[in-house]
Image (cartoon, rainbow, N blue to C red; front, side, top):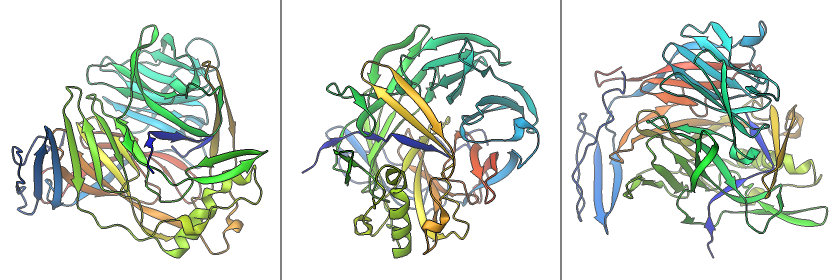
Length: 465
């Protein structure tokens, strides 16, 4: 039996969390009721288009529009193992490039800082505290076209607005922490925040399934109706356990398929279940495009399965000492994708896991800073943090594993595959910000040093850089 599954929030969330290359336009056939094929500049790209009851399906069969090899070339690194405070990062949750400035949110410090194009510290945006223009748990970040800086404060349950020099302008109440998780800035500077909608019959949630969506933030706070991603029939694998006599279940199975969604700056809602390489693009005008891609599932080795199952149960073992995730529940192959990252250039980066490899330094065992959100239906909530390792490397006598990462980039207008970008280095799991060929990501090295890095997206063999 399937159920209408939207999204899941756990009690503890671990926070690690050429202008447009001239290649983001539409391409391929004009659609129709029968399949069509088109070739990109390389002569190797094959895409099939079908239309059924007004919904177009675009399937990338082979090759890509870019044709050449896509790479991320490092241009700048901000952050040091030791030194001045502005260069010591703890948990980077958001970053943004605006003109010749780079803005970074460090939720652990906590601080929002601005740097110049060479990585030199310029100023701090706002300051720590609970008063006007202050924050104690910054999370989301967006920079408007006029230079205004938007920052969500999870603990304060509000949106802080600053001028281009980091001076406070106003605060907008978001009602509760579950409405201050992240931001999306529309191309017209409309600002949206990610919200958690609790079940009507639930007074308090620590662990459970909840509905997530986006809602616009106006001068007086949340405005308009929430925008929810489309429901997709899917039953995720769950693990049951008991805490103080209460029966609970959570989607803790490593590499299992899941429902994923994201809202793009143009208002497109992207959603899909990763048991197959298939996702939907729902456009503001009501049109829908289904995107599919031919892919080879990535096998999971027995060592990976054992390591991930042990690691997946670490948080629960804090409450239930003998809790384990059964390795037999781990699938034979990794899910088609893990998440969607829309960029500022009308594209979506589909994040997927490649083959695993041995990790002698057990870099993924260190959980860093943890964040616990206590939610209530009445709109209240508390936020607390804990630090230290999520697990001890000695708990993994058979060794640790880590994933390699790949990013399939699709054009939102046409649904066509532009190309695949491999992670440029260890520790790169997903971009924080992408606009044209500019990519920002938070990287943690083997020594635990966190850096904000800037990369340039280059395409070999196409004449575009």
